[in-house]
Image (tube, rainbow over all chains, first blue to last red; front, side):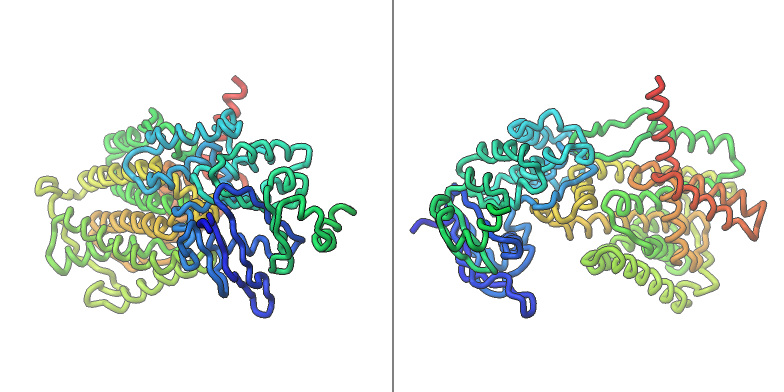
Length: 251
Length: 325
């Protein structure tokens, strides 16, 4: 079997008596378009936080591109190619859009700790950030502070920052959260155009978006993988309807 | 004079208006020769406030204990001069800077693992501990009586500290200029931008792979170094060190000056001490018992009606004027 872009083996996490991850075995293939779904409280965000190193698992292993990163710090994981976005915007609100992205680009290029030359004199960081914004249709907003930017575009900046890290694996935590469904097609357009080699794991409640984007879906329930498979299988699975889709479709 | 934010789209060139403080300072030297000792004190406090702005305004580290580094620098310079017989002002300043840096990295490495109120309390604790040490170690520091007998040799062996404070003023102005140049450079650099990133959202800085903790320790150490230099300067110009340099009141007073001028704008650190120390000088002469009331009222007004301090008001006025045009 080839090396997975990201893999977890028997990943567990408990907070006292509460178990939020109960032995999750998960494989994200390179270049995959994979969705993680599940009802509220299924442990999706905990899972992402363990993958990125915000939380350490109680037991189990996390392997990124063949390298065990279970004990690796958050910053090092980013350097190894693991990027993420946040469900609730985690942006630099009083900085312009350009700087939001440039901060990430500068970290990746190792420019960020430099003290002697002005930031704006680093044309390579600027140019790369501008190019990235252009691919997301945000070029015109480069000079606008996040505070003054419409919410939908803020969601795109979330993605832009993660892309500035040139990740091999990208975790998208509800990229369309809070975006009216009429506008969520804009997010989908952006997702569709993401570089093919990036392995993407998307966590999303918007089922239309999930089924249009993902080639593989994992359903998480109460900290365990209930079922995994291609979208058609998941859509036809009775257990999934019971715990998850049922709730949604009836609403 | 808008906020100096640095960043990847900011023009780092010095604007004409940024020459204003230096023109005023040089003009004051010629026009107000009888106020040079107050002037030197203001220049020193500007440097001290600049060091505070770097961590409070840019990196978002809140502190009430910055007097620890200022006070240590003051005592180190004073002890060298009064006890070790080292009179060269450059050596005294270098030692004050080194002491500030060492204490900065030592304490910063511990306290910057914490946040918000815990951090605030720890900064307060550090300066309180130092104050008590200085109080008890009276053979070295003079304790509550203060350290006198501070002798400062001529600057570079050429310029003697005169009784009118001319040398002291120009000397402080020069050191301040270097400090300002350094701080400004930092703020416009990628490092400075990343500090602003930490202030705005440290969660995200972690997520883009920034070593947030080490960046904070580094800027804290730089800030402590500059505060140490400012402390050294206050000793050299006063030729005396009192316990008050280490007091929590002095750290609080500094924060008040910075808020008064405007936080996170470089030049807030210039305006604040000027307004505060001149108001203090005037009010203390007029109402020796009630002058704190005046300062307090001023601060309440600024906090309630002029967020962003004096420079914040100027900003808004300028914006309105431009709109009218």
